[in-house]
Amino acid sequence: MTKYASATWTDETLIDLIRVKEDRVAFSELYNRYWEKIFLLAANALNSKEEAEECVQDIFCSLWNRRETLKLKYSLYTYLAVAVKYRVINILDSAFHKRKRTQNVDLVENDIYSPSAETLLLEKELFAKLENAIAELPEKCRLVFKMSREDLKTHKEIAAELNISTKTVNNHLTKAIKDLGDKMSASSIAFIVGGCIHRLF
Image (tube, rainbow, N blue to C red):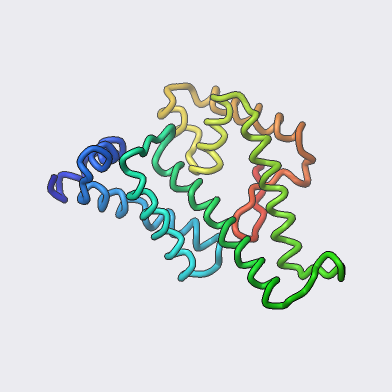
C-alpha cells in the first residue's frame, strides 16, 4: 500500500492490514491520524509534555505488539482513549509510591497525608466506583454515554454512527445520568483524569 492510498482507508481496513499483513504504512497512517488527539489527552492529564509523549509512544507500541490478536469492539479512538486513561492512572500511582518511598513517610501511622497523595487516592476511589456504575448501564445506553463523554462526539454524530435518532441519543444519555445519580451521590459523580475531576453533567 502506498502512503497516499492509506489516507483514504477506514480505520477498520487499516487495522485489518496491520493484523493480517503487518503493514507498517497502515500503522503509520493510524499513528498520524491519532497521535495528536491522544497526546493532548495524556498531556492534559499528566501536565507533563515528556511523560505524555512517553505515554503515547508506549500505547502505540503496545498496539503494534498486539496487532495479530487486535480486535476492537468500538472505535479505535475509544480504544486509545481508554488506554490513555488507564496508563495515566498507572503513571500517577507509580509516581505517588515513588514519592512515598523517597520521603520515607508512613502515611497511616503518622496520619500525614500530603494534598497530592490524598487527592490521588480519592480520585482513584471515585474512578473505580464510577467505572463500576457505568459498566452496569444497559449496553446501548452505556455505548452512547461513552461515545458522548469519552469520544466527545455530538448527539448528531452518535445518531449517525449508531443509525438512531438524536432524540434516542438524548434519551439514552438522560437515562445514563439518572442511573449513575441513583448509584452515586451527586457530589461524587465525576470522571477522573490526571489529578483533575471533570463533572459529567
